Image (tube, rainbow, N blue to C red):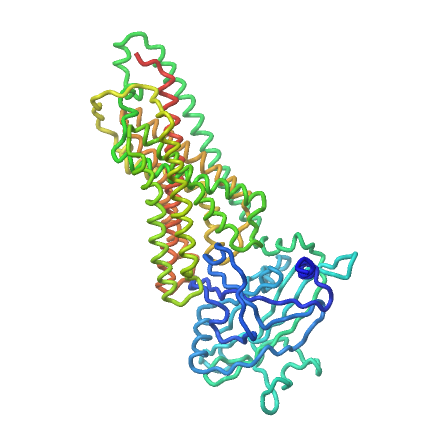
Length: 615
């Protein structure tokens, strides 16, 4: 029976019931979602929550049933959903949501509701806006007073693709045109009352909002809807394409390709210079015949007795490198899944759930990487380092998240993570991630320590005075520009999809950008590390991590620039939310890029010092 019911929902026959679900109310001005029934909309007899995954709950999705019920391929006109009489409180709630430009989100057969908007320039494709506005602000002709009007009449269009073999069809589109109409009727209101403004018997349809429905205390609002069905050539497998193909595609593609070409060109030049210079250096050093000649030489060979000396705060470096490995594994596997099409936007919350679970399971590699490095630095207390790896980064991120969640909860928003979900997150962290970090740490520490290619002297060598351009802060800040340049075009799309509630689906390009980011982080760190060693400064451990990691600073500055130029956020809480979440994102980016730069430099120094003859 269950299987046949499932098939019926996939292939509805004429007359089959189609139930519309409602999702959260969203606004790009406040970034605070609210549940649909937080406004005094007409309700069904009982409200039923749809089962939601972890990602959906964290996104603030609240999917519930609604009084909107259609019959497949049976058009309806002027169906009355219900009547609501406003009081001062409910009128104020409507006005606040209209002021903040809140949009109502609905779902039919897992497809989100869209409003088609035809652009003014001819020949351009139709743009789809997700959800319809709760209402509008406006003035009556000849009046200066601004009034609030609610969208109380919805004209739905359900597009379907017909199955040629059977009489069944599949839903491939769900569109709406909202109107504000002051409905009128004769006599007292009852369930059988016929409207004079919208009557299926008299074939009177709502086609405009000439006499709109005002939102004021003591006013009544009658909610109505029409449904029309349109046959479509779009196949069920391609029904998401219109949602994912947003406007200005060519400009986006061109700018991304342009950015990638510049970065690739720079990377190629950097690699070529490095290979030629190094090859010449190594050949020259290996041809020196006497010890006197070797001592007269300057440059990176002189540092062979100090270059692998453990750095200050080596424990902290081990923790950060391990956390970076955890991030790298999480992002790489997520990207592969996304490119293969497993994380389609039709699977709401799938991306967020995948990221969280992969983060938890990559704890194994975090523990392993930090313990291996710790042992190389002659550390002995592996449990201490493992514990710090398991708690330092997640602890900081969770603390910020908890404060932001308290702010959202204070605003009574549905975006606040419920207690049960918060408990699930803590369980994932303590119950799965921490033990896995310990397992990884144990395995990593049991392995023999990584041998240095050259012996370290007992007495540290004096570092000569450095040129101004080799100042650590200056070179670290310069190093972050190139990795940021590799991702900043893509970053614009990602920020737009997150903060302007659009779908992001160019994972193929994102994967290419990720590869470019890895190459760029590695190369810029190696170049600056080489210059540092040539000027006889052997303190490269931390600097290699911070050089590419400093790109996170530019990411945060760009996020601030995006906030002031692209977003219309006015509420202080929304601003705090934006900067709080962008701070977590920048911290993640710092850990990821820092670890890439560190490992590139680690490999590079071991390679060059193992290729020269040390007498």
